[in-house]
Structure formats: structure tokens, C-alpha cells
Length: 467
Image (cartoon, rainbow, N blue to C red; front, side, top):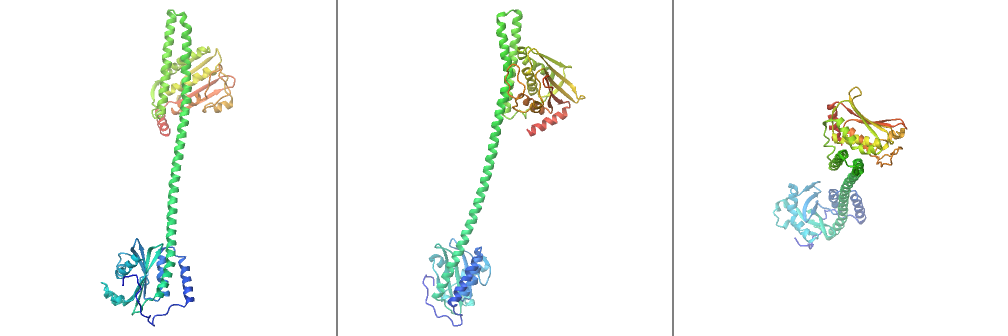
């Protein structure tokens, strides 16, 4: 029979044990519920169902089918005692025998009793005859109206299922459905927890990336601020030189004569040199802004004495304005492998600093020692007669944005960057900087460079890598 009606059945065979007394039924049901509370998987529920159901309803065999999307996916039998996936030999046998009934239950969502199962013309009738299956009860397990499982109970020798069996299996199915639903909710909760954990992990990665990006942006902003400060500092000296030369030209214009004309011409050339110096600084700034300065640090054989003389020319007008004499001491024209533009900036900062802190009508000495420290190093030093440095000043003098106790002697502006720039440039050459001073008796600022080209090339290469 394939309808949703329950066929009339014969009285149960006296040989079949009667149903449990009501007290035993309640006790068994309580025991099953307690065991189900420990069932952490659908497989456990299947096993418990096929273990307890024959104790509620005496049968020869109980099979629990798992159904997903109205299709059989696995089953558990009191005879097999394991889960068989669809497609296995045993699974095919059971499913093919009961498939019409199970499909009808899936479609109608109702239980079916067939107490004349031997009379049904199934292809597997020989197997049915050999197994003597005469009565079958198929009941759905529903969760919110959706079928998730089906239970088949089998009897032999004409023992019929009755309506009281339906009442029992409906109660058991409802209990099993609650446990399966709870398992589904636990699975959904675990899946949700995994999704939340993954989302949190992705969020943490995103936050970490954003923090790194923020750090990079802050570093970029600070670098740009530093570049602007350094640029304003480096442009100040040549601009001061240009203004001083312009003032001298204006003063000399009324006295133009042959000699004066030559002097004006010479001053004009100095203006041109100062302007070219400024253009070079701007070019270096743009290069550094494009992250090219440290990687484009080029060492070339350079006449360092000539380089220092150009720096003296740049600072000529500022020195004359304070009546300061600049003396340069060098033996010959030594050639050293340096990055000329940046070294010239470093020397210029030393010289302009000496002018700034020297009193009126004083002297400044610049010395190039090509064989310092037993010939292993060469050295540039700038000595002035300014106020000198105390011990605290000596500790801070090469740090960035430092204001020292000494003040410029003619009210000149000081950014606190010049000596920091010198230190950076010299260290990129593999050298070192320092100052010797007795407070109240001037100061000697020096920069020391290694003689050996191989050592220097290696240092510059490593500096570029780490920069």
C-alpha cells in the first residue's frame, strides 16, 4: 500500500511480547532522553534510535534513514550497526526494498503501515520471501515540517503493526527530532563561531594593515616636514649671500669706474654661483623626495681643497658683513672619493655656523689634513673664536632641532638642523663628526673620513641597503 491511510491489521501474534507497562514505558523513555542528551552527532542519534526503538515496539529489524533535500543519504540498522552511505551494497539493498514506501513518506510527510508487504510486487520479492518480512511501518522524523529522517520497523510471520505502534513511534520521532534539531543548531552555532572567528581574524589583519599604513603615512609626513626644514635651512645661507652681494652692488653703483666695474662683475659672478648653489639644493630636495638620494649616492674622485674654496666663496659676503677673515690651510690638492654635492653641503654648514657664532673682526680657520691618524683617515676641521660649548651642549650639538646655550653674535636665525645634517652626510660617507671646545674660547668642529676606497665603497653599499 502506498497511500497515507493505515491499513486494517490483524491482531498481534501471541508469540510477540506485549508492549511495556505504562511505568516501564515512561522509565524507558526517560532513559532514552538522558542518553540522547549526550548525543553530539547525528550518527549518535541514529545509533540510539535503533537501539531503543525495538524496546518500545517489538520488531525484527529497525532502520534509521537520514534524509537531506528529500534524498536518502545514509542509514543505520540494528543488524548492520554502522552508518552506510548511499551507493554501498548494503545500503542499496535496504533502500531498493523500502524506497517506494520511503518516497511516499517523504512526499506526504505521514506515516505508513503495510501489513501485507509480501503481496507487493517488488523486484526484490525473492529477498522479501527469504527474509519473511510481512509487516512494515515507516514513519517520518520532521523538523519544522521538513523531513530529516525516516524510521522503518519490520516484522515477520504476519505479525501486524497497530495504531498504538504509530502513537509510540510518533512520540519517539518527536523526541529524536528535537535532538536532531538541537544538533543542527549546535552545528550552525559552531559554523557561525568559525565565521565570526574568521571575520575577526580578517578584521584584525585589516586593522594591522591600516595601522602599518598609518605609521607609514605618519613617517612620510614627518619626513616631508624634516625635508622642508632642512631645505629652508640650506637655502638660507646662499640666499643670505645673494642679498649681501646685492647690497654691495647697490652701494658701489654710484662709484662705478674701471676698477669698480670689475668688482661689480666679480660680484655678479658670485651671485651666479650662489644661484647655482640654490638650484643644486632644490634638485637634491626633489631627488630625496622621490626616494632617490640615498640610492643615488655617487662617489667620485674629487679635489676636496677646490670644493672647500667654493664653499668659502659662497660665504664671502656673510663673512665680510661681520668683518670676519677666513683662512684655509691645505697641503696640495688632495683627491678623495666622495659625493661632492652632499659633502659641500656639510662643509658649508660648518663654515656658515662658524660665521654665525663668531664675533665681529675675528678669524675662522679651515684646515684639510690629508693624512690624519697615521694616514688612515683624512680630516676637515673648522675653528672659530666664538663663545664655545659647555659640556651639555657637546652632548646635544649633533642632534636634530637642538637649541644650544650659545647665541648667534649678530642675531642670525638658527633652526637647529645644520649640524644634524652634517652628521647624516658624513656618516653616509663612512665617517664621523665631533667637536673640541673649551667654553668661552671658541670651538673646532671636525669631520673624519677613512682613506681606503674599498672600505668606503662597502660602507656606502651597506648604508644604501639599510636606508
